[in-house]
Length: 206
Image 1 (cartoon, rainbow, N blue to C red):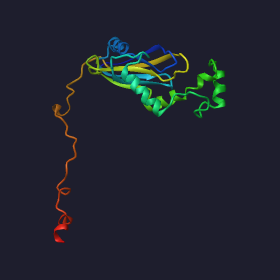
Image 2: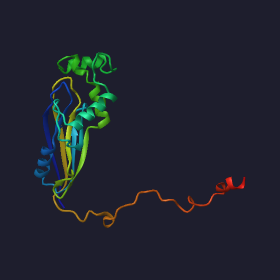
Image 3: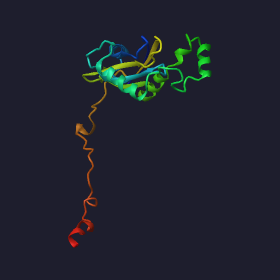
C-alpha cells in the first residue's frame, strides 16, 4: 500500500480594518484531487498567530461588510468576549520591548502591533483543522466550508495557509464499526443503583 505526502502553501490577501474571512473550500478540494490521496487526512494550518482555521456552515447571505451573516454573528460574539483594540494601553500587549522589536523587523509603525485582540481570538479558535479524505473526497458534508480567518484588522496583510495531505492512494476496507450498529451512549443504571433504600420508607413510619 503506497503512502503519500503532499504539501502546498496557499497565499491570501487580508483587507484590514475588519477581520477577514477567506473561504478556501474550493482550493482545498482542488488540492485533495490533485494529491492523488484516496484515503487519509488533510491538515490546514495557519502560518500566523493572529489567524485561525474554521470549518463551518456557509450561511450564504452576505451583508454590506462583505461578511456572511454567520461570520458576522461570530464576530459580534468575539467582540463581546475580546473587544477590538481601540485605544492605546487597552491591553498589556504590546509592551515597549515588543514595539521596538516591531521596528526592528520593519513593521510600518507601532500601531501595527496593536493587534492583541487578534492574538487572543486566535487562541480561542486555534490555528488549524484536520479533515478526513474518504475515497478521494474531502469529508465535509453538504453545508460545511473551510474558512481562514484573519483576526488582525489593523492593517492589510499577506497571509499564508499551509496544507499537508497524507494518506494512501489505494482503497480501504469496510469502514463500518460493529457492522454500523448505532452505539447507545446513554447512562444505564445498575441493579445496585436501582436497589431499594430504607430511607424510602421514612415518611411512612412517622
